[in-house]
Image (cartoon, rainbow, N blue to C red; front, side):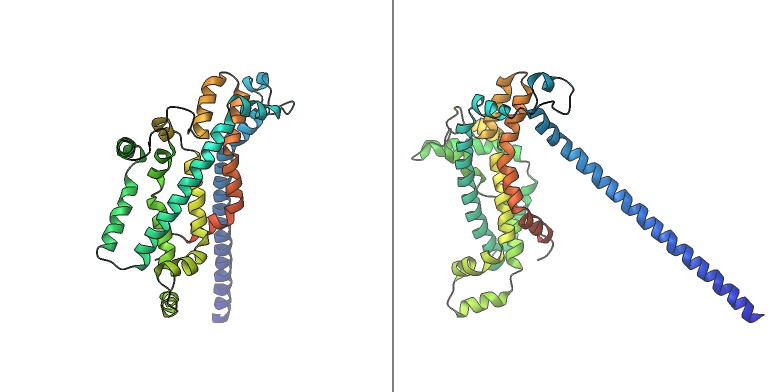
Length: 302
């Protein structure tokens, strides 16, 4: 009898274990399906405006003003018309110059500051770094008026004017707290043994930074390049405030003016909008691997 009871209990436990296994597996499948459904919904919501912009830019004026989603005929001439009517050539050149100057300055100051916070010990280093990080909580719009007053004052006392010129459009954005934080986190992970070996070879801080640290930090540097490029290329409110003529206005301001002048020509508006984001798409496409790698490794260690 005891043997039969043991067998019955064994069968019961086996059935219960199998039931729990299938229940856990079913729960896991449902959870994964829910996650995938949520992600797919997010992708659709994010990409729909972009797809609509491209399709509308290829429509005729009548189709763009209607309710069509798919153009009956592709009108690639809309891009040439938008480029010509918006005078994008001048704005495009201005954006390239402004972006290159801003990017160069931001990389230079961010790399040097991040290295100092990560590798050089000086009194109050951690307190200064914490104070610097606290400024991230300040909304960007709050700084517009103080920055405007500052660049106006610098233009009055300096040898060159700042308002309606490249200094006002670039210098205020050469210091990025996020860039300093991101680079500092990477620099802090570099083993001290490498620095000790460099010191034995007679290398100082600058040589160690240039020959060892930067080659090992290509991923975060690439992230800074991408984010700085996007921020500078898309700048609108600040250029409108510090410029009063098209001489130094970037392409975002050119698009803003074109939208006001184009009236009901929705197809040309969308063509102009797509033209302005082409450089951003290209730079992200070629740096996507480094960008995602750096985001995955940043800020979570050190």
